Length: 586
Image (cartoon, rainbow, N blue to C red; front, top):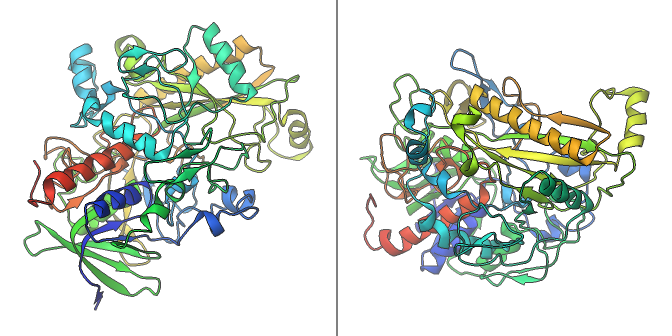
């Protein structure tokens, strides 16, 4: 029998960006809060201290900060006619674990979505007509619009500390920024990062091709900064150890750098590590949660009673917990009934490396969100009828690191091993630059998440099963952007190139993005969404699930900015509306 802890006002599952920011907001309201993190404790010092953190083999190759598939994984199949198999070796996506979650090992790109993407179904109906949407494409509106979320985007950018340049400031188009972005109330907290040479060349080529380049919004500090929580950041030194690493320099925004040390000072906050939440416990009528049961470091079960349960884990884990706990009806692709598991989506990405014999780019000088982008081909700017696909994306230069194990781009046709490979490495290391793509991924009727009927985790629970494959819409989109990258190669006079853009089935072996979304999506119709516009479960009103699980489809930009805004949006609803009268908010 599980031992029982003292009851608290709120229990938070996961202590990454969502969990840490939500804890700050709820403790500020006077609530006693406990956060449960399945992984170990992690602090900038000693965990990320130099020189230990600058270990490419340990962190970039052996995934020190990631979930271990032996402990937690999913099964994956391309379609409902296949038997799903476990994702036994990390490749395509890299869920984080431990305090800070994926926010500790990310690169630091922090975008806002386009306004059109938050009401995508309505936008398509109004501009192109509903007939353009394929029958099996299940696009939905988010249920909250850009203007409602703008103050929360603004606040999260200030908490994180973003370096960038506004392109649309209160409706005025600003030189040097993204002219296609939705209006923002204030400038970024810090000016843009200094650009490396690849970005300078990319920006020049983009202008020559008629595009509008701008510095990418970076959660890498360009100068000394103090955020609203009193946390201090120092300027990035371009060490090249961002993605897959914790930041040793207090320069990359993370829960450790921006939130946690302020949160730890609050007497009404407690966190427990190595605590794997097994289930959200429900009252006998199934309409409210009574708390959560978790396994501690010894494997013993513990019940944590709480009046409020916040699911703040990684997107896949949030959906898994809702399914295991019976929070909302599971989605059935055959009938379309149920909502938990519906609308799983990923992110279409691609990359082209351009090689120049006479240019040395010094790739070891890099930052996670370094580079220049253009948004002329964003979803809001695209003619879906003309292009033959629904979607859009952004392309950018990217020089994040020159790590000799992890990052060795070589031209197409290079031998994969042996003397020819060694010769090519000697010739090309430092002489290439990357043009990367991030683009939309639409949802489909039979792209979803459910409980696997065969495979179980170490606690005897069914694994989460993912059914997903690339569709003609996304594959056509990828080839469209591949040709745009080739135009840059011709414009810049590259001597050689290599490319990776999906052109067939979804391949789990190659890293593409950790931007997995959907499965417990938000909306205003309980028949097609698992949570309402305030991120509150339709069925269990004291359970909230902010995070990427809420996205009905994936937009082209990195999800963290939207996740942060939704967290603050939900926290306001809890503090100002729910706590005084706990009930369904819709």
